[in-house]
Image (cartoon, rainbow, N blue to C red; front, side):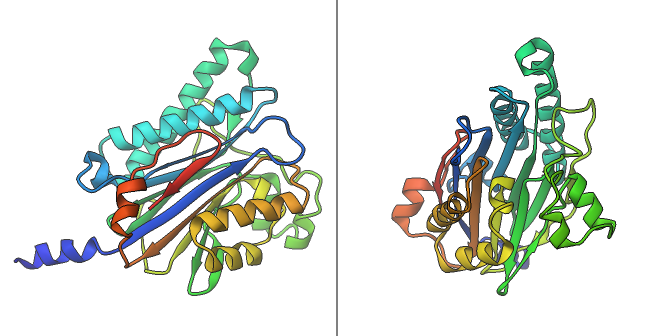
Length: 286
């Protein structure tokens, strides 16, 4: 066995278990959020491209937000697995294609005029994580007991926070905290934030993706405690429950992905190793 072969074997020892859930909340009749996830099976052609999970929060009123988030989820997943290039290049291609597809639908269907969507996508490939993000849906990393937001909110309040113009306490009280500055479908060309280089994974890492229906109502400490204490599916259910208990004034979506050096049980691999969903609720994946 060559050194290269040993290195590749070592690279395959991290595994990701995850789950995604979405709920319309207590106030809104429609769910404009979409969650989507692909985890390839052993031997699958997509295996070399790894995991891709995303949360999209549509906007536009009536049914238009639902349309925009669905287009984003379907397009980003399709292009990521079909395109050539690095994970970052495939994410960029997916976001660009989704932006154009949403704009085309807005032109073709007057009921969808002005629609758009946030999109936060996590790709895991060769033991590295890549993030692509636009809007105010969020990605968190829980590592060694500490949680940090790894996406920047493309919102008015987020820009003011980064500029030091307001405090964190002030941000949560502002009536304009949901004003979005960038989203897919809102301009001919958009500039999502995309990690050009992957972040090496560690066993024990936990990633959380969520829409603002969770992050507006459940703070980082509660998210961290829940994701650390429960397996991904249970953590998703508990976090959505916490948002509903806090008022549930918006659609609530969350995905929890735990990295481990322990492979899933054979029956789990056979049952859910490949999960793809662009409906509001998405199934567990291991």
